[in-house]
Image (cartoon, rainbow, N blue to C red; front, side, top):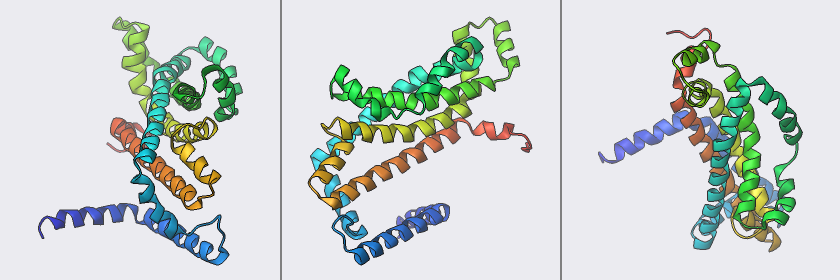
Length: 267
């Protein structure tokens, strides 16, 4: 009995924090179930049938390995974006000549769907992981570049002058002064980039079909197994929500000090 009390208290705490979201999800599932029973379309399986199919997919070792392969590609593309786009964005924020050089290019590239470049990249690099990782990297780079640049522009010049007076070089100032000061804006870019990485990952796998969540989705559609189609979409949606929550918690943990610096905050 005593072991169950902390668990029950934890469930109550989760309910108090997320009851609106949980009720909205329950209402959506009920609406879905009612629509499926009313329309009786093969292309719209019921919510119950779809939910029942989710553990079937997750118990299939091959499907799970495919989903893990997708997450690996997503992590590689996102990590590459962090290593390249964030430092470049910080440099753009502190260098007007560099910003004038790159801003037109980023403005031109921003509206282009990155998955639309997949056929061209496949011609160059084939249909393996490298082409998918490159497309994911291209997708996440623009929001990381933009938010990093915006964060660097807002850094107080006095911090830069103090670092220069202490003898710091440009690289040291970028990593030890500009990046920490711009971190709240950079983390906002990371949160946007995670969602874009997920979308681009699925799109690229649906075009270059070998394995992965996008391949599972397209195969189920090809074979008209509609419960699998909706079940894979649910799994992808849950992955997206989990990644977004984790990124937001990481943002709060790394930049909790930023709220105390907002205008009107109390000490």
